[in-house]
Each structure stands twice: as C-alpha cells, then as structure tokens.
Amino acid sequence: MICKLCKKREAEIILPYARLALCPECFRNFFIRRVKRTVEEFKMFRPGELVGVAVSGGKDSAALLHALRIGFPQQPIVAIHINLGIKGYSSDCERKVERQAEIAGVKLLVYDLEAEEGYTIDSFSKTRWRRRMCAVCGTIKRHVLNMVAHREGVKALATGHNLEDTLEVMYKLFLSGDFKQLARLYPTLPSTHPKLVSRIKPLVRTPEHEALLYTGYSEIPVREASCPYSNKPIVDRVKRWLDEEEHKSPGFKYRLLSSFLKLTRIIRASLEEKGPRLNLCRVCGYPTSGEVCAKCRVASLVSPGFRV
Ligand code: AMP
Ligand code: FES
Ligand code: ZN
Image 1 (cartoon, rainbow, N blue to C red):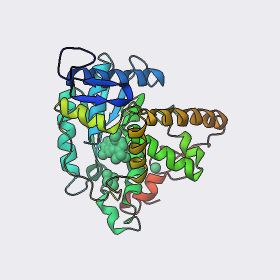
Image 2 (image 1 turned 30 degrees about the vertical axis):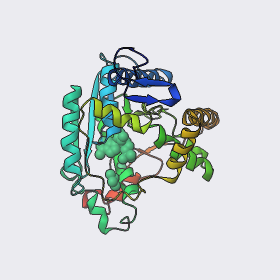
Image 3 (image 1 turned 90 degrees about the horizontal axis):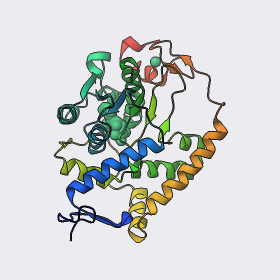
Image 4 (image 1 turned 180 degrees about the vertical axis):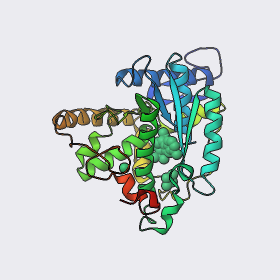
C-alpha cells in the first residue's frame, strides 16, 4: 500500500479514524501537526513564552518534547525531570531523559529529590503511605514540577498525558460525579496565582499507541524499567473498553473527548470566581488552601527539614 499523503513511499501505519495509511515520514509530520493544532486550539502558550516540558523518561513525554521542538522551532523550551530516587527505576529514567533532551536540542533541568530534600519516594515505603505510593508520588511530583518551573520563569508547563489517559480519568470522574475534578482535566489550566504555573496537555488528542510509534520511528530512547510501585493493571478496564469501541466505530475516542470537553467548559464557566482563597505554605512558601501544603505535610513524615 502506498502512503496516502506523499503518494510515493510504502505505507506502514494505518489510522482508521482518519482513513489514512501513512509512511513513517508522513506519520511523523501528521503527529507534529496535531500537537501544533492542539496548542493553538487551546491557546496553550504564546510566541516568546518559556515552555517547560515535564519529562519522565517514558514515551509520551519524550514524543511531546520532540514534537514541540520541531513544531515550534522559535519557542524557548526547557525540559524538566525529577529524579524520584526509586531503586532500579529512577536512574534509568534520568539516563533516558538526558538523551531525549540532547536529541531535541533542549536544556534539561534535573531536580534530584534526595539531594535537594533529603528523601526519596522509596522513603515512603515505611510510612502509612506504603500502600498508596503512587498517590504520594503524584502529590510530590505536582508540587516540585510547579516549583522548578516557577523558579525558572516557565509560563506554561506541559505534561505528556495522552488521549486515553485523559479519557480514562474523565470517564471515572464522570461516573463518580466528581465534576470539579473533571473540570481540572481541561487541556489548558491557566495560572490562578503568581506562583502557580499554567498547566498544559498538548497530547490530549494523541492516541497512546501513536506516541510509541513516534518515539520508535524517531529513534528516541525511552525507559525500559517500569515503576515498581505501579499498581495499575497492565490493561485498564476502561482503556480496554475504549479500545473495543474504537475498533467497532473508528473515531469513538475523539467523539467522547469532544463531549467531555464541552462538559468541562460548562463546569469551568460555572466555577469561575469561586476558586479557593490561597495562602502561602508556612514551610515552602508555595500556594495552598490550608496552612501547610499537601507536599510539605507528606514530606514531614520522612524528612526532619519539613517538620512544622
Ligand atoms: P504519570 O503520572 O507517571 O502518568 O506521568 C504523567 C506525566 O507527568 C508525564 O507524561 C510527564 O509529563 C510527567 N512526569 C511524570 N513523572 C515525571 C518525572 N519524574 N519528572 C518529570 N515529569 C514527570
Ligand atoms: Fe511515582 Fe511510580 S513513578 S510511584
Ligand atoms: Zn509547602
């Protein structure tokens, strides 16, 4: 089969939802164009603004960094990685992000949790969080990414959440009736405080499988190890259902995303002006609705420097 776009090279990638069969080169251009259109549609950043890309070592953020660099050649971009200090995992992640940043030609900032704060994610395996390591890790990652981005002068912080990640969480929040959290999954979350950096998800329209193909065809190395604390089943039930529906009716995932986005716009409009009043955390000085932020509260369990 011949590529539908260049009509020259052999097609290797079939995208039923777009009725396209593409050669690797046209696929990569297609991938980059979709990231560009998503950035523009959701007004994720403006020319000249410093964009931070949170890179974990995985395929999604690796593809994101590369596609943003090519799609926006004039944009100032910096990659940010947190070394979480997880044995048998974090050092592989750091090695891979170093290569990814080098290939993209982007400066990399590494925040080493142990060196900077005196503890690692492993430290929590002896606390009451031991059965919820991903939750505590998520709290720390969110806070540290914002802090590093803010200190660096980043205007928009991009993460590699893809189409299925977003749909899975949106669907679960929808079923549980947590519309406030659902609204927070909007692809652009503007800053609500001078110390909170705007969050963006330029891969919200990118299927997971295509991020993997993109890194493969671009020869971008990605981490091999998987996090020892991940308690997610290999195939999530909701993701399997999404794949089945997409198979029966190509474009299903996009139609579902479009409905969820409509819903989040309505919820966000009704919530505006009612955001919580923010104080500055007594320990780290970053915004929180309480007195001490969630990250400093958990950090105090494993590091004396955070005791209040
Ligand atoms: P996860 O929550 O692990 O699915 O990751 C979601 C996104 O968060 C990734 O695509 C990255 O953009 C970002 N991220 C996760 N882990 C790290 C890390 N250790 N350092 C920097 N960014 C990360
Ligand atoms: Fe955070 Fe696995 S990466 S618990
Ligand atoms: Zn704090």
